Length: 171
Image (cartoon, rainbow, N blue to C red; front, top):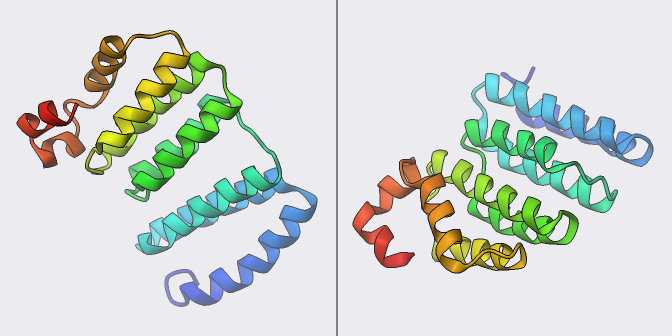
């Protein structure tokens, strides 16, 4: 039915998801991820960013913090579908700084930046700024942070789009 009536499925599933959020929020996240997979298979990628937002909202409001690897797995899946936005990456930097160790937060952010770039998001200077802040908190100097970020994203689509020469000016 996702193929033929995606909005009807979304409306009906919203009711079920809301019930699950109240009683079993981790299960609700699993259901939303599975629902996103169905929409992807049906060729309805336009629904995916909203489902990623919903997953993050459930996790935030229910205080369900996953370890960095499990959280990154969610982002890997959505990045593979080109459903990751630069706003997701920006917001995750704050989440990482708040809930992970400084080293975990820095590594996590760099991996997210690389995922975003691989999925075609054009790199922005503020992402490097966030990496520098997280790196400083982890005890890394600016040169080391820049080297890690550039190494992580240099050969990805996001860097290619803005051009390598332009990238050197931005970083």
